[in-house]
Amino acid sequence: MSNANPINIKRIDHVVLRVSDLDRMIDFYRNVLGCRLERGPGVGRLAQLRAGDSLIDLVDADGRLGRQGGGAPDHEAPNVDHVCLLVQPWDTETVLEHLRRFEVQHGEVGSRYGATGQDLSVYIKDPEGNNIELKGWT
Image 1 (cartoon, one colour):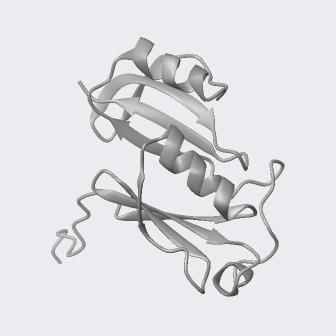
Image 2 (cartoon, helix red, strand yellow):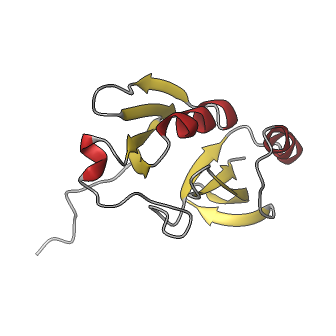
């Protein structure tokens, strides 16, 4: 029996977050994190934002698609533990100054391991309490 797995994952294609305030979340991901709105939000209340080679999909929890996932998320029960976004180039002071300009609180900058190896990162929360790790790649 062969140990070769026919599923060869290269990267995360997209992450889907169910959200309570779609417009506020679009603003955060566009203005604070620099994602580009690629599609939506349309009738289905789905917004797809380009994050480098990947997408972050925001689905209105009260919309047709969002209701399929149950009740709306909140700060006590976020959708995921965290999403890690690779930032390149990475300059710690520039990143922290940008977060301060938008009044985004952040955790300690530390060296953490991820898909690209060990590097500096910082945790923030989006407006609905989801943890976002901004990770440098040097």
